[in-house]
Length: 136
Image 1 (cartoon, rainbow, N blue to C red):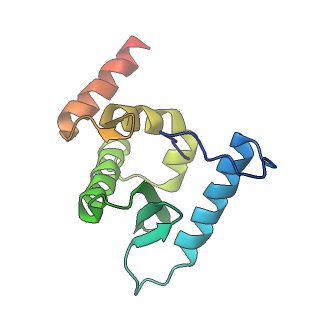
Image 2 (image 1 turned 90 degrees about the horizontal axis):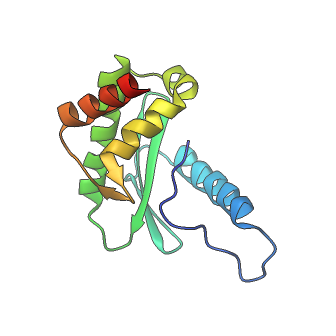
Image 3 (image 1 turned 30 degrees about the vertical axis):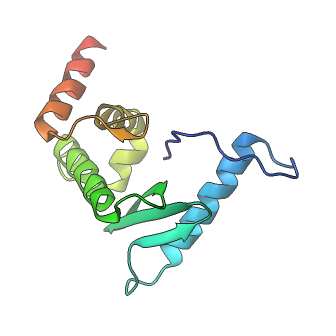
């Protein structure tokens, strides 16, 4: 799953469309993160961004931020998102994410708005998600 808060960069040669460029970037980021040895840090400089990732069992959570952003705060951001998923799905696994991707996006939307943290209270976020479920 991926969520873009900025448009994908369009190559100067104009050979790829925006969607094709997103797919290319996502594949390259996936390759960089999954192939990285555990002895290295969870931060990778990539183009004009910093990739911050964490691995939970077989799941990788990655966020791309500005080079000047605080790495540790984004590691905590990833951790809180995983805690939200864990609380909602009662011990989240890959299948929960695959078969309930719309709920994952809903939780992410309640947590982050336009790439910025909107709410940090697990209880508040999960209460809002459950309220939205009742409305549906």
